Image (tube, rainbow, N blue to C red):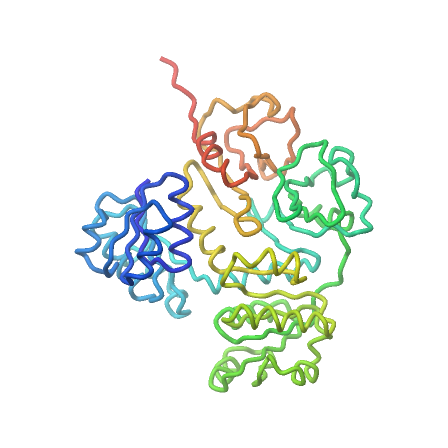
Length: 451
């Protein structure tokens, strides 16, 4: 696939790195020479210095024959103009990163009228990801598949859980739930039946959504519902999140140090208490009972501030801490060593959305697990293929992969070796990064026509 990426910031670099690793033909357009030099130095891709919204630069990049153009510069207008021009010139699919809420709320207009195929708002998507974690208090991450029929939950194994020391084949879980992956010592394991759960493990449960609550009780500590929430940082993520949580009838306090922004937030929110103050002020946190919250969420633009204040809130007694992280390479340290419960990265969330459109075969969604240490891929089987109707134990799947769930006729199946994949099924597959191209190739197979 020929892919043009406009903008070599964090998201653009991550996409170029990931997609070049998968042997796609990548061209990166970047107007800043220093950023362009970084891409040249570390990645095996073609780079062009220039304005990605320029027809001349797009022509040089080969937009006429491109399969996909992704515009992820810091300017919404540049991204939208670049996609519009690329579509007119010949790009098959265009994606624009758009942050301004007024633009993002007009997505139907842009897609139907001026030819931008997909618009992604990283801040809005990040807010939704945080809200899903808050609805399941014991979860470190939550993902939904097959229109909500299948759920993936990341959980820390409780030290007193009866599952510790047992082989997975002997673990007593609901029949419609499976442990699809284990995070141990910062490494993802795609397990088999004889693997053992150890103290300190983090597990990824996948199964029928209605059965997940029972599985959670077996794996980890059951926590009461989140009612009191404190948000530090009234930027776009903070505003979007507060709006979502208001619909859940939660008790929300939002701290913002910019008075003008506070006034804007107060005009946009109905039930949230907006506080003008410095979130790093210990007296303010104590006065507003930060330690009495069910969840403390730090969403400033500074990773160090988010980390330090969330750590302080935890010391004061906050039950769950969630922070936004721009430098995603710090996530594992913050969660594993420093005790932050959940770190969210808008960059990784944005990359996962775009990867869904790049994957070969009938990919419905892509989830990047634990800072890209593994992937969960949802596929729809639409064409006859040689692997259909054969017991899974006899199918030669790539190693370090696992079929986590099959959805057939609106029913969820947690498969064993005797089960088969049928035409029309939705399949959720877990794979380590190096195996993803092999999984794509496997599911891209089509049955040979008989003469």
